[in-house]
Image (tube, rainbow, N blue to C red; front, side, top):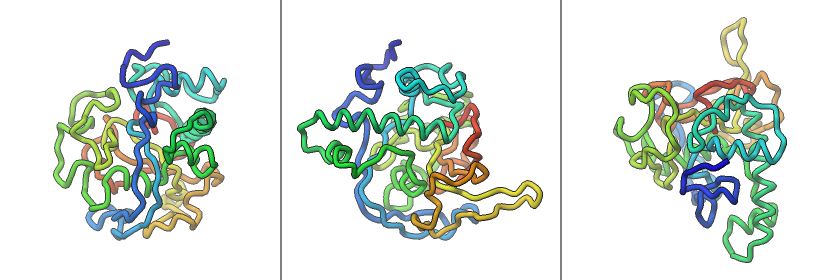
Length: 272
C-alpha cells in the first residue's frame, strides 16, 4: 500500500517526512483559555499555565491508521475508517480507537528514539519516559490552535472561509490534511478549524437522558488534576471534541468551542 503523498514517509508509519515526524513543539507558558462571548461552558475566559508539549501538525490520516491496524492486529474499529483517500483524516473512529493508535505509536517512537544519538528534546523525552504519545487535553489542543493571545480562530479574529473546510465551503466531505495552509495556527498546526472534529482526552461530563441535563460536568476554570483527564472514566462520560468539521457550520469552529460525545461514538466527521 502506497500513500502517494510525498509529505509522508512510508518507511516510518506514514508520519510526516521531517526530522520530528511532524511533531511541533508548543512552548511552556500561559494559555488564554475559553471565551466570554460563546456558550456558558466556555466561560469565563481565564489563564492556564501549560508545560512544553508537542502536537502533531496534521490530524491522523487514513494511511497512518491503516498501518497501525496492520502492524498491531487491532480489529476493534469500523472498516469504513479506511475507505477515504490515504492523505485524508481518518474518520469513523471512536475515542477508544484513537487511544489505541496513540498507545501503538508511542511504542514505535520509543523504539525509534532509542536508536537516535541526536539531542532533540522529543527523542530524549521519549527515551527517558518523560513523554507519552496520547490525545491532547482540551487545554493543550486549544493552545496549539490559538497560541497565547486569545484569538478566535487559528489565524486570527476574523472568520475567513478560504482557510478551512466546513459546510459553507461546499466540499461536502473530508479534504487532504493540510489543504488549507492559510488556516495554520500560530505554531504551524493545520486543520484545527474544520475538516474533522478532533477527539481530546478530556472529560466533558455525564449526560442524563431522563433529566436532559449534564451531571458531573467539567466546567471552567480548567483544572487539570481535578479528574477531567482521567482515562478510566466509565463510557457514560462524554469526551471533549474540538475544531468543527466539513459537515458543520462556522459556529463550531472558534478555538474555544467545546463539543462532546460518547467515547464509543463514531461517525463520518470525527477524527483525531
